[in-house]
Amino acid sequence: MQIGFIGGGKMAEAIVAALIRSKLAGPHEISAGDVSAERRRLLKERYGINMYSRNRVVVSNAKVLVLAVKPQAMQEVLSEIAGEMTPEHLVISIAAGKRLAWLESILPKARLVRVMPNMPAMVGHGMSVFCAGRGVTAVDRKTVQELLSSFGRVLELPETRFDLVTAVSGSGPAFLAYVVNGMIEMAVAEGLDRDDAGLLAVQTMQGTARVLLDQGMDARALIQAVASPGGTTEAGLAVLEKSKMTAILRDTLKAAMQRSEALSKG
Image (cartoon, rainbow, N blue to C red; front, side):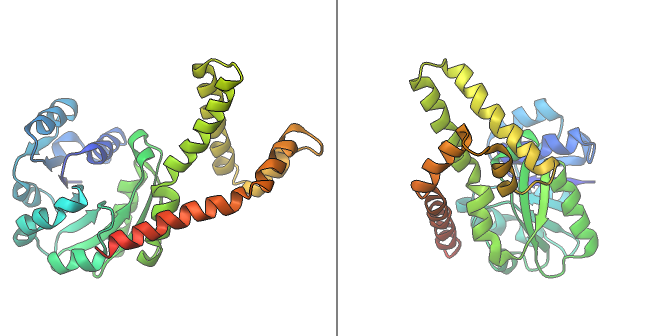
């Protein structure tokens, strides 16, 4: 697969590493453009991919392109490459807040896909949601699925759900880390070493996620399985229920979703 990256930041690097690791593409099949000479040097040395200072070269080298530039720079970058686009180009945008209609207005010839990845993609355990624009084929969808699956799990949803997706999986890692940090701080306050407290909390979060995913267990069922009548978990859950934690989480996600809606409207 000949694939090009417009932008060579951290997320682009994570995808490049995943493509090479999964053997979906070799270094000689990957090209990327970035304005930073330091990033170009680093990615070239680290992965052996083709690096360019001009994005137009990347567009001419590959028919599958990943737009991985910051949203505020997208207008300028797309204006630079719009004239090089053809109906043969499949363009995958991972820029937050940039809707398909906006992308299609600037790149009318290309087949466009919008993706919402998240931070765990950097360690190969991301959650990516995509939606397809006009003209995207079944073969294109398969290509996108294969690419995104190289660094995590994949789901296709309508673009109308993307603000909610942003709140749950885009911002979600920070919210989960907030809970983990609270557990660590409590354990440290009770006299536990911070490293030990961190290991206990983080490994428990990771293990819980694996149980839910690998066994297909519903979260409510897991809560019931751990909470023995009259036990320690039940005592803690009673405090959570009294504090209206469910309502707090709902408000937290709703605030993130509403902010995503506002940003998407420009």
